[in-house]
Length: 225
Image (cartoon, rainbow, N blue to C red; front, side, top):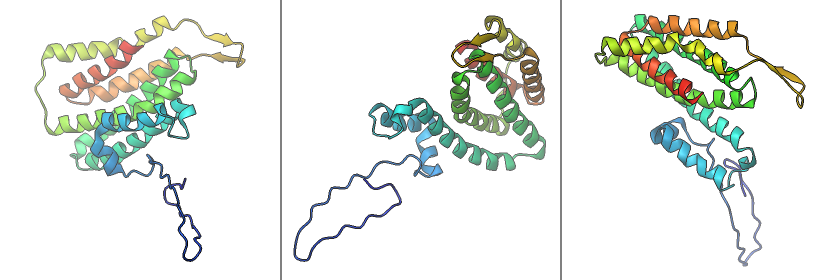
């Protein structure tokens, strides 16, 4: 087995045959960004998912961490492309989009930390979110360049989602002591409220169509929680 990019010398005596069996593993990390993005997010995740299920990938026994790594690799590629697209936007749109991206990241991490009491689930979901967030930011950039009319009802519904964010805390309960790790799992409401406030500020700076998109995007997380 020869790692991608490495070489291996085989010595064969003169006038003799030597059979050499070579196994070349598929390297996800060896794929270029263009190759990953051409497959699309779903296609890319399906492609690498088989490695974890079939135990071909040496990190299969750490499949959760492997999925985090795969998602972040795709997310990094999408982010790089989005950065270039943002640079091409009018100056008035660049800052609002970058603020939206940053505040979405802050809110999502807070949300997962609350949902999972800052356990490992928060880290895993937070890592995997990057790819989906960058796909969403790509949609936002496209919507700014190709705005679609939206109704007042759609805008009101999206704003209601933003207003109801703090209700996520209702089912969390009190902080608790974990005997195994000897740690208190706790997330303060003040920190979460700051994240919500930052998100609402960033969204309100954007056109109505983007507010609706953000409302739909967040409902996925609120619904799953």
